[in-house]
Amino acid sequence: MCLAIPGKLIAITSQLDETFRVGKVSFDGVLKEVSLTLVPEARVEDYVLVHVGAAISVVDEDEAKKTFDILKQLGELNELDTPDSNN
Image (cartoon, rainbow, N blue to C red; front, side, top):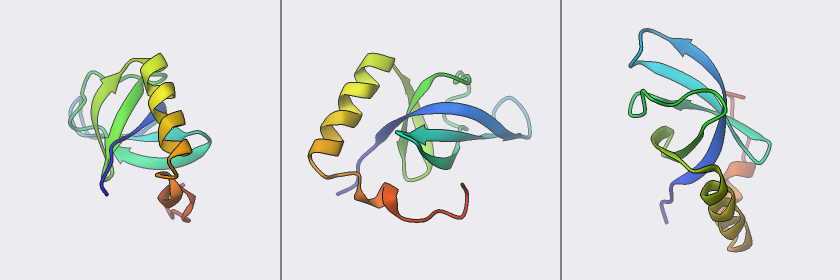
């Protein structure tokens, strides 16, 4: 099943311009590099919804935390435990 997972944008790691950016997102302590191209409005400390390596929207912090907790309870976050060379 493909899901979009909420995470907290903790840093902009590269930026060509205002549109083409990459950021480091924390998913409950698991760090991943994601494309921010689809969310030019995203800023550090925002919560973003990430699908297949790309942030697709900025989301409310409370809703992001609730969604993450539900996904964790359902066991849908196992792939976050795999090693990632972009950490």
